[in-house]
Image 1 (cartoon, one colour):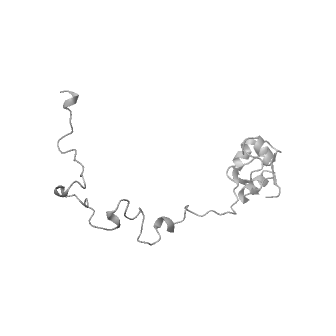
Image 2 (tube, helix red, strand yellow):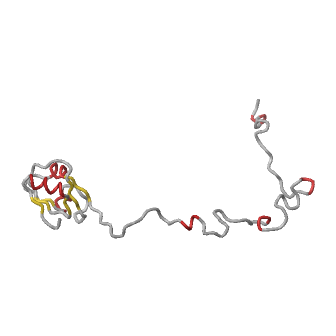
Length: 149
């Protein structure tokens, strides 16, 4: 057997329908498109998603999913256990010190201290927000939370 002898299996390939090739072909003259009308013409027919004049689904739905609150304020969460790891007793925790220790990327970012973990060092916390549980843990360790929290 040689490459020239290879051919597809019997019945696996079907010849395409040759339209408009004379009356004896069965698909001559109008080529299976019927008589006149929109669908008989080249490029005729309705577009994809056409719903008979009703506003299409693609235009009825909003462009993007969900709702974006324009007034949302995003805080970077920092847990009490992270402060325990990074700071020593008597340190001041603010944007600049958090940036210097590598806890946050930008010192002017809004930070909220959360209460996960334990704190044994007295720290002075001067960040944008502090949760109630974090505040109680900081004060129990002998530290203090200063405004604008």
